[in-house]
Image (cartoon, rainbow, N blue to C red; front, side, top):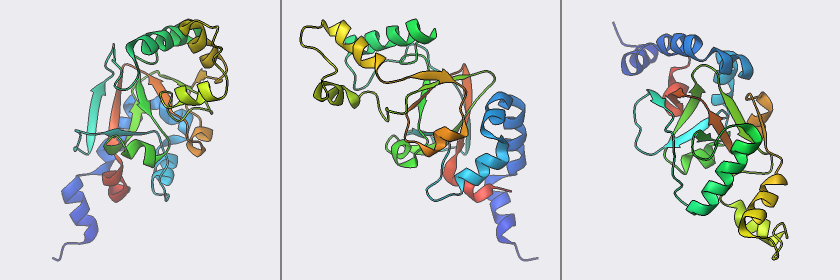
Length: 205
């Protein structure tokens, strides 16, 4: 009997239902907040696709489970700036979002800059912190200076805190509204599943 394209996909990518079952079991709070897997599937086949997306430069598997690395160190931000921002988030929201979270974006173009694009599914309870004004917090440093947020009489710490105070950060669950923004999302959770976007687009049942 001649193999159908669907048979080929199931052979290559296995049965997508096992991933759906795993996500429904482990990620119920997140799926509830985003409208379930049906809504996730509808968003990921759009052009461009939407979702909680993250670029992972060394990942190639279809499905991954990873723990959130505590004590993350910055790649581009100075250590002093990183510590000040981390302390500000901890004072305001009770969590060190710059060093103990995963970063994601609803925009594939931003996620792709960091590697192969995966859809992120926090396991169990989670929180998200974001600002509608921030696509990438590091890149806003110069913008803040240009707009006069910093006062030259301020100390460095006072300037950073004043800058963060005007950005309008909020903490809460993911909502569908965020998918229509370009917001950087910082997700607080202990671990998460990651589903390769390109693979899943071929597997959606």
